[in-house]
Image: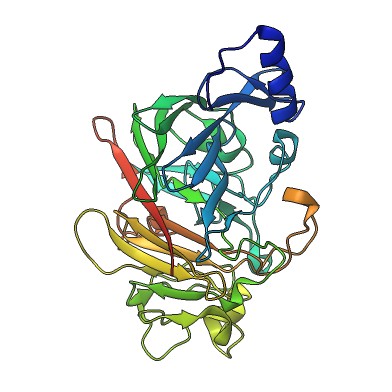
Length: 378
């Protein structure tokens, strides 16, 4: 936002014609008031831009990515995420659109886990196949709380939140920091760290819904997906991993080469029947540090998004449970498979699967999760 050296009355007039009535500027660069929580607390929203015309907007509520605007191959810019226009809309968010999800993203069988000989009981707030489980941190996970935000680095925002001991049934006071940064290489970096004062479990994930066409009324079945993942985790009918790590070769789960999503989504394959389509965890090729996990392309617009991470797995969800029951940005009712999620993560139900990579965090340790979205067009 530019600074204008004009009289105060003209400044007010300019602001009123540029911004929705419910917003007011609190910072000369990228910070605004998005609205208020039901208890009256103010919620800020931050805008990040780069020299290539990309724009990301993030808010303190849920540490949510509100929108991501990128150009297509013709240079036309559009928002490529599902979401809401106002804070009031985001307060009704039940699909985790754009959210930072925790304390444990994905599913935990029966909402129970044991840690150091003690059994903990969590909310069972999801029941795929009619089988209750714990999902994405519970009834009021990190996606439904107010974080504290402030500018970070050259072009970023830092959000902090302290999850109290016993919150949603989890042990330990967990201090979480999540940052978003946008650079001139067209990379949006989401990074989370967490520390605890008592042993606990952690799997914090980012949960944006993407449609690279820029038209939320279209299907993502025509998108082309590549996953750097030679294995996936088969599940039971409740979408809980069985413990098996199965090869994707020769199955509709094989995205090691670029594949159109819709070509095999309704194949006669057990995993797809259980998930109503793609809603599974893929095990990434082993490697150290941040590495490429996925590449998605919309052939029509030419938009490409590459996802890199330091995590061992990625959940690809094809929007099977979107059903047009709620209206999002511009009043659009988001239909089945009108967006997809690519959530880098630890393994689902890891607390109950000793053979899976550990999700336990202990005092003196730091949990870290890096996820980078790189945008281009071709």
